[in-house]
Image (cartoon, rainbow, N blue to C red; front, side, top):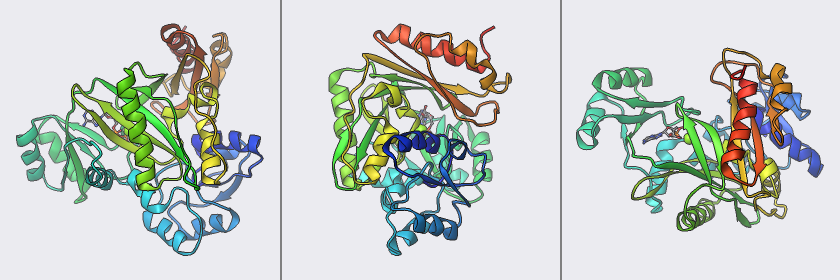
Length: 369
Ligand SMILES: Nc1ncnc2c1ncn2[C@@H]1O[C@H](COP(=O)(O)OP(=O)(O)O)[C@@H](O)[C@H]1O
Ligand SMILES: [Mg+2]
C-alpha cells in the first residue's frame, strides 16, 4: 500500500485477520500504519524508484491516498506490475477536472462545471451561474483543502494568483439537501458488491459524521446503489471505491470518487458484515468478496478532529464510559482540524445512536467538562 496513514493502519488491522502481509510505503517510521505493525519501506510516493521497490516486494500495489504521480502508475503497469485500482481508473480520483469530463461523457450526472485559468473566465462563469462560485484545485485537495467558495471578484483574484497558472475546476454553489455516499467494491475477477447508502455530514467542507443507513427513500437509495455498481464496472476499478453524491431538490449528482477505502466507510468496521478494509484487500487480491449488510438497524460514526485541547488519548477513559462506543485513534499527533480518529456506535434508533457516538467523540476532542 502506497501511504501509511489511518487508512493503511485500518487495512493492516484487516490484513492481520486474513493473514495477508501488508507492506506500506511510508514517509516516516511514526506513520500510523507503521505504528500498527505493517511492514515498512521508507520512501516518497513521488519517487518512481521507491514505488518500483515496493512493487517488487508485493503481489499487488494499492493506495492509502491519491497523492501518487499518475505517470508513475502507468510506468509500473507497463513494467508488468499489478496496480489495483489500475492507473486509468485511479486518475478519476486524482484529478477532479478529468473526473468531471469523463463522468459527463459516460452520461453520469455531475454538477455544471468549467475549467478556468484566468479571472475573466471565472467572471464569465459567475455571469452565467451567479456568485458564489465554487473553485477547486483539480489535484491534491482533501478535507475541504483545495475548495474555495468565491463570493466575489476579489476572492477570485486571490485564488487565481495562488493557482499560479494552473487550471481550476469551477462549479455553481449547489443547493444541497443532503450529502450521501456509497462504497462499492469490485474484485480483480470482476465481482462487484455495494454497501448501503450512508449520509455524510460535513462541517467546514470536512466530513464529520456518517449515518447508516442514510435517511432517504428507497427509490433514491436504489438509484445511488445502481449508479455506483455500474460506475465501478464502466471504469474497471478494483478494490474499494467511494462515490460521494449530492442530493439536490431535483437531482442526484456525483461529486467525487475515491478509489481506496474512504472516511464514509469507516462505519463498516463494526457496522457491516465485511469491513471496507477487509473488502479492499479481498478485492485487490482477487479473493471472493464478503457480504455488505448492516449488523445493526442504525450505525453512526463521528470523526475525532484535533482541537486546542491537544492529544485525545488522555481522554480515552472518559470516552469509554459511553456504552457501545468503538473508539479508533490513529496514533497521529494532534493539530486543530486534523482527523485523529473516529467513534462508531451500533444501535437500534438513529437519534440515540448518533447522540452516543457524538458524546464519545466530544469527550475525545476535549469538548465535555
Ligand atoms: N458545488 C458545490 N456546491 C456546494 N457545496 C459544495 C460544492 N462542492 C463541494 N461542496 C462542499 O465542499 C465539500 C468538499 O468538496 P469536495 O469536492 O468533496 O472536496 P474534498 O476533496 O475536499 O472532499 C463537499 O463535501 C460539500 O460539502
Ligand atoms: Mg469530498
